[in-house]
Image (tube, rainbow, N blue to C red):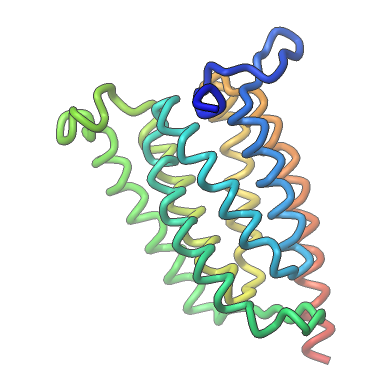
Length: 214
């Protein structure tokens, strides 16, 4: 059982790339949670929580520390989202909305600013906390940007804001290259699939918003 939690415990190999049980299970659950949330299904939250716990272990082992800490945030927001959506379980109508332009601009500006500060911190995290993070973080600023944007997207999801999908589309696009550079090919392919799903989710939520506004 302990071998399952190791990134070196291999489930199978494809074209010379070894996929760990940890990466495989987290990937399947994550795809399921995205598919569910695009349809406004409350089961997205418990499925997402299971995926988050697996990815926490994975990211720590491959030294993407911002992504590791990001999963803790996801866990908190997922629990909140599950609680917020609980009264809508019997309501199958997907009711989405747009945020005000001023609010969305403020959020975007704040996201970029915080991401840059976070990148500076993560580039030196091995100096601040060498016991917990013994080696320097890889791609600290780029990793911090995707982390910051993911934080924002995840925060907008419980309120069913359409803009959340725009954040996910940018995050997924960057992540494809980032994980490819780290050699986590399966995860890179996952984000290529997630990019397609995010575009589909955006279309679904925009359509639902137009239907609600009529």
